[in-house]
Length: 175
Image (cartoon, rainbow, N blue to C red):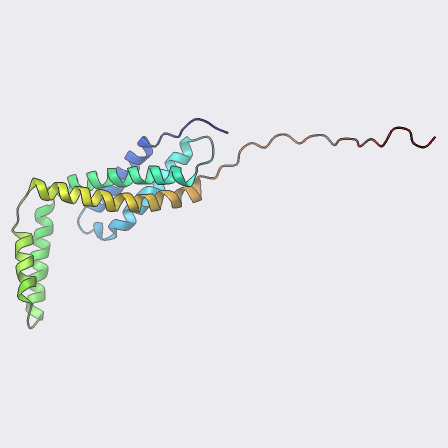
């Protein structure tokens, strides 16, 4: 049994950065959950490549959770400067809906105006980061477990075959 623990952090940071970038870019982030699950699978693949022995589901869960947390941080940092693009897109979408809809509920219009005119708040940023980290960690765990089930089963070197043993009968009973 291999007593050496796998190195989780490097694969999680690499895969988390990739998943976070893809989930933070507008119009690419429509597959946000899939990017995070894929990041967990990628982290499990990188972990399996650098670990000599077989991996367990717990290894996949650990590397997946770390991947999800790293992806949440990268996603939040990338989404911050692109916030204006997202607000403009939502505003244009609401104007288009208003042209075709006979009546938009007043609460809906008020909610959209409040969400697009809010500006930056440290508290809302930290709350969003915490919420994203929790959701992304769960999705990363799912991806990590899937990745370990695909990539983590390595065949260990089997012992060499033993030569056949001669079976000896009872001591000279024929006399």
